[in-house]
Image (cartoon, rainbow, N blue to C red; front, side, top):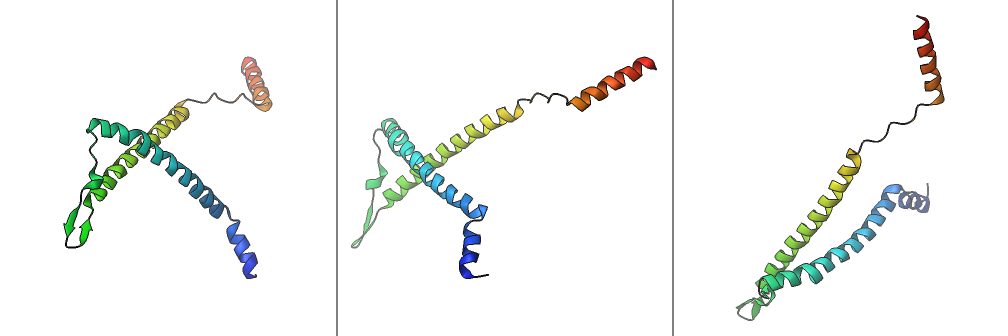
Length: 127
């Protein structure tokens, strides 16, 4: 098998295509979560904390500046993003559980089952 045909077989497998779709959807979802955190949650959090912003905190060591405030800010953003994703996934899972918990109506009996039931009933009445 030639190199190109092997590559084509690899690239066209379902797993690779699923992964590609997952990466694209994940990137789009990341943009949504970033907007949720940056445009909605962080401004509300800023109002609640009186506009507290850690990103300006730093410490000078000689000529180097250690911007530990940006690190603290990144930790807060991570926690908020993780909580937002957790809440979203929890909501989706609870919706799925409700759909799965709803009992499906039993399927209508087939013609053969109806005929067999009639035969059974006739045999019961004769016995």
